[in-house]
Length: 97
Image (cartoon, rainbow, N blue to C red; front, side, top):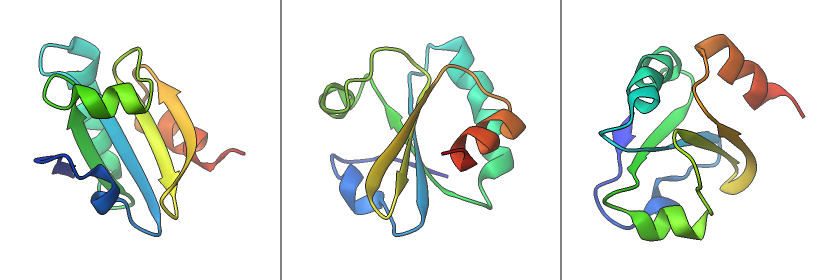
């Protein structure tokens, strides 16, 4: 799991599945999502984006609520998942069409 350090989200996306977690340090459900993402860290490329530091990226992707997970495949946005998810639920939502 990586934390975005500079305004380079596109560089962090890979040709596999990348989960981009939009969060804030003050957000309780976001902190709970950390455990979920830790469980999936060995399966997916995970990039965490602090919306307070990178509000321009959050604005670009129209993030209105956190936590929000954007799912990218082959660097293309394929899905948006809003709210706290268990690891099983998140993985099921990633896999469904």
